[in-house]
Length: 214
Image (tube, rainbow, N blue to C red):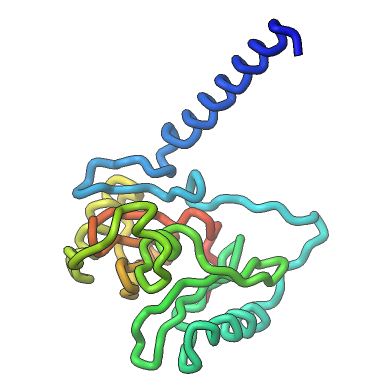
């Protein structure tokens, strides 16, 4: 490669890196603080109330009953007594919480609305769930004692929503190992968020799309 071409390539890579950095840190939905309480976060996995995915124009969603059956089968990987809670339909995916026989939250899982593929939900479920054992070493270090109970987490969520979606209220919630997940909306469900039990950070689930029903 000629010297001029080499330096042109270097400059191009630098510009690309700067653009990616600006896209990540400049978007209100991407790990950006809102100034409401300790360490608030927006949704890291997408930049808005619903991150779009792409499917062929002729693709048709799988029926909710089929999605639920797939999610129930996947849930058995975590416990023979595991069951689904809070099954919900969104424009991008089907969502469910997996709980044990006592109602304790295990994990959150998704089924692609068009392919039916089932997978662990990204975001807090992957990064904060101490049961999965993957996240805290990457995001926040090894956890010690939890700092926020469910009531305190609800309060933090309410404070966050005053700036994120004025008029929204915190709805149904579920405790998981290391964090809490809540529905929120102004009259009906409009989205979901999670609150870390250790740091109080708030993480909006931006990958669901529009809520369609339960």
